[in-house]
Length: 457
Image (cartoon, rainbow, N blue to C red):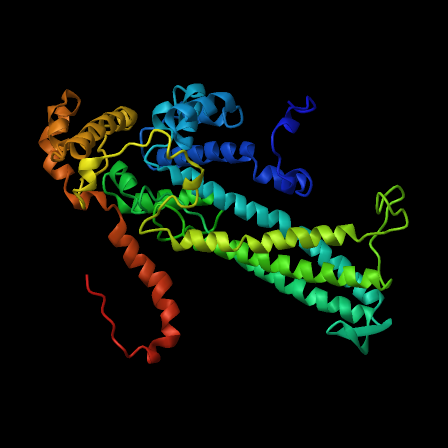
């Protein structure tokens, strides 16, 4: 509890406790993260209702009235049991919304809330940062104007050179900051919403919910995107939005870090020459042992934080490079328990590769989504045990046929298991993406594209 001292009993990052602004710390807080998840579930339910799915006003109202009252203790206990953060919060939300429980997260995958929330936080983080940077530029511009004609010794190689002016030197700093604000604005405007894309980005689950109506699935994607405050969503995604987005975001921030480091290093050097000083407060202590000292501690801190920021760029580069096919969990898997309870499958180890069918469940109705998913999960794990532990064949289909729960759809199984029913809107997404985002980029280079290269599958 705040004020009780409990917050001092565990590690706290000084990046937050000492240096982050109140609004930026909240932007990336658990409170903001998980209330955003709930808002995203609300947006999805509203859009699905507007497009004709059997969702009631009462269900939507119930969700709206419980966006903020998150039981974090319950969510933590659910995650401990389920080992799944999103489903833990689905269960926690459903607990206080029993009427809406069957339609929370309907058709969605974990990245619907996870990735879309990250994009919202990035956008809002830019919106917090940009006005602050503009304020710095404005103040430094006033400084440059004030001292535009005040001569000072210039330095090259940190050796005395020709004269310049204090205002001109400040303009060198300003030029870099103006480049940074342009880069940040561009990165912010380039951000799109992941949208409503399903497990591998094909929107298959939503195409099924809307009985093959492609236009309604596209409209669903747009409606949720608009509710979240974005002008566009990415036309194609895998399970996640492209991790190149994270590279782009962190690169412009690291570039700003380089600018800050250069400016503050200059201030530190000039402080030693007695040409410029940081503000020094009335009771501020420069050194515990040398009372006459006035260390440039603000500039030093800026340099320290800037170095840390610049060093972070390698992380998203590595993460983006190892996102195999539709995605891997390399961006978070290093935080999971792996060795405790590790299960070895010796028969499976010598029987590789093994092609296992892992199609999604065709739920008889939205309200039975969880029951159907639970049944498929249990039967799949039983079938997997036969394959991995006993060296047998995958008998999942036989288990489904033998389970009374699936009796109503036995006559449809052949049609339901047609692989084409699981690709969703992938073909249409390809057509639109190539037409709107690839061909226009290539148009200026048509004359240079005489070499024909074919990719053989």
